[in-house]
Image (cartoon, rainbow, N blue to C red; front, side, top):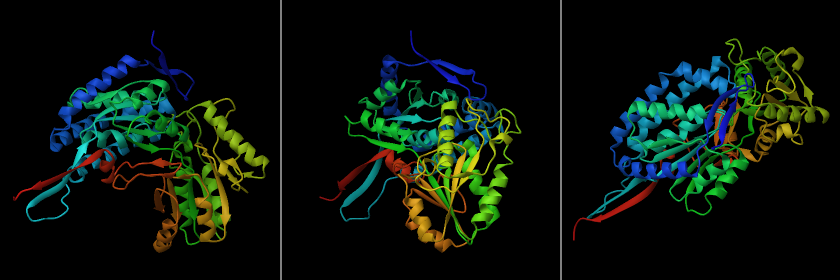
Amino acid sequence: MSEVLRTISPVDGSVYVERPLAGAGDIDRALDRARAAQKSWRNTPIATRQDILRKAVAAFVAKKDEIAAEISWQMGRPISQAGGEVGGFNERATYMIDIAPEALGDYNPGDKAGFNRFIRREALGVVAIIAPWNFPYLTAVNGVIPALMAGNAVVLKHSHQTPLCAERFAEAFEAAGLPEGVFQYLHLSHADAEKLMGDARVDFVNFTGSVPGGHAVQRAVAGKFIATGLELGGKDPAYIRADVNLDHAVENVIDGAFFNTGQSCCGIERIYVHESRFDAFVEKSAALVAQYRLGSPIDPNTNLGPMVRTSSADFVRGQVNEAIRAGAKALIDPAKFAANAEGTPYLAPQILINVDHSMRVMSEESFGPVVGIMKVKTDEEAIALMNDSEFGLTASIWTADEDAALSIGDRLETGTVFMNRADYLDPALAWVGVKNSGRGCTLSKMAYEVLTRPKSFHLRTKI
C-alpha cells in the first residue's frame, strides 16, 4: 500500500487534501515520458509554444475564485488577499512568454568575412521543480513557464501543504493542449524527491525552500554535472532614512513585514531607522499593526491569517520571548487579538524595539509576523547592519534621494535593491540571491540563460 499525503489546514486543523504518494516506479515512468516528449517539444516553434502557454495561463486565471479559496484552506492566507496570487501568476507568466522569442533568439557576435557565426540557445532537457507552500503559484511559475517556453519538459513536485497547486497547473496545461508528457507532477516523499533530482534523466533542478533543503538538493545532484537554481532563506532589511516620506514608508514597510503573516522569503524582517525619525516611525507602525484583524482566513474581514502550522508559530513565539528576556520591548499586546492562542497557528503580530544583532529575532529567519526595529545614526551604520547577515535576497531603502539609494545599494550584499517599495518581484528583473539566500536566477531575459545551454555554430561559407 502506498503512503498517503495529508494536508492539514491551518484554518481549523482538519485534513483538507489526501493523495497517494508516488513511488519509484512512478518516477521512472514520468521521466521516461518527459524525455520522450521533450524531444518533440524542443523542436516546436517558439510561436506555437507561446500560443499553448498563453491558453494555459488564460485557463488558469479563469479559475481565480476557486484557486484563491484553495490557497486559503491549504496554507492560511486570507481570502481577501489570496486572489492576488493569481494576478501575480498572470503577470509573470505573460511577461516570460512574451519575451521568449528575443531571449531565446540566436546571438550574432558580428560579421566575419567568409563565415557565418552565431550562438544558439538549446533546451537543457528535463527540469525538476521543487516548489514551496508560502506563495505556491508565484514561486512555481518562475520556473515552470520559462522552462517550458525554453523547450524543456517539466516535472513538478509541490509542497505537501499545497498539493492542489500542482494539479491546477496540470489542469490548465491539459486545457491548453500541451502535448502529453511535457508537463507532469508527482506527489513525493522527501526521500523520493531526492531520487528524482538525482536521476540521470533530470538535467536541471529548480528549488525554492530552506537553506537545509538547498544543501539536500546539492547532495542529491552531486553525482551529475548539472546546474541548480536555489532560492533559499532571507532576513531582508529595510532602512528608513531621515528624508523619508514617513507615512508612505510606514504603510508599505509594515505591509512588507506582515503580509502573508510574514511568511515571505523577501518579506521585511528587520528595520533600521534614522534616529531623527525613529520615534515617529515606531509610533505610527505600532498604531497600524494594532489595527490588524487576526482570524480565520475564510472570513473576508480578516487581513492576518494563521501561520502555516503550530510548530511555525511556536518558533516565532520562541524568538520573541527570548528577545524580551534579553531586553527587547514588545509594542503590541497579544491579548488584543482574540484569535491569538498558544498551541495553535494563530499568532498575534509583534513589533520589537530595544533589539540588537545578538538576538535571534534580528539574525535568524523568522518567517512569521514579527519585526525588530533599531535606531541608526548614519548611512554607514545602516549599511553595516544591513550586511550583517548570512542572507542576501532583497534590501529596501526608503528615501527621497535616488542618488543616495543607488550609492547605498551598490554597497549592499543582496540580490535586489528596492527604493520606496519592498516584497515584490518585477518579472523584467532578475530574481537572485547571494550568500545563504541561494544561487541562480529566475525571471527576466537572464532566466532563459539558466534554462538553456549555448551551442556555437562556426560555419565557413567560402573556401
